[in-house]
Length: 234
Image (cartoon, rainbow, N blue to C red; front, side, top):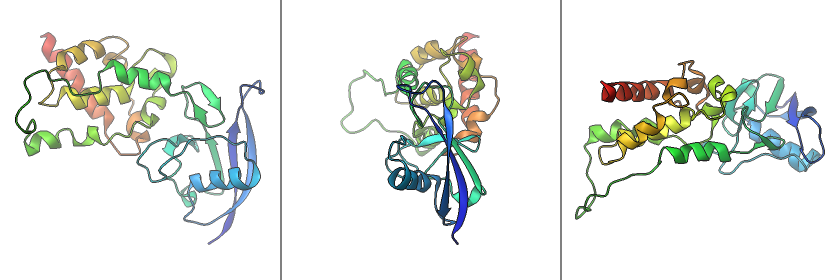
């Protein structure tokens, strides 16, 4: 059923604006429309200068993460019927704004690189593949499903106040390889995350869990990393 909503978008162009401001649009939407559909309507029919990222439109690429009614979510996943008659959209916090809803994700990816997000194994390659049991594969299943949207890290108060903090996405990527039985760089990764800007800056607030569009319990994974770090030092 079609109905009207007030759609408020944070706008900011550093080339000409002194500070972010909000722009409102009255839109006629259907119950099954998503926030991403509303942004498309605004850009295509009302203001072509509106800037935002999106790609697959199906919750797989993570490119359209933004703050929707106060919570980090993917614009392609959220139905307008879930949000009421007033919707406010802002860029995810903690990152420098490039324009409107687009933020600079380079610091996020740099922190991922610090944990060596790839398999390390210098042993002679087997004839076929490096085998794992079903249980070993399942232990990594949730960590592997991360789409690197940045919603978790951007929702973390420790990240807002400590720019050198690695953040939950980097920890999840570290978990994915530290607990991979085929990998041989686990201790090196632990060295990189076992400090005051690493694991111990996490205060178990659970914001990252609430923000994750893939429903990954990042806090549980981080707790396992903390246990691993402590046990190796005993």
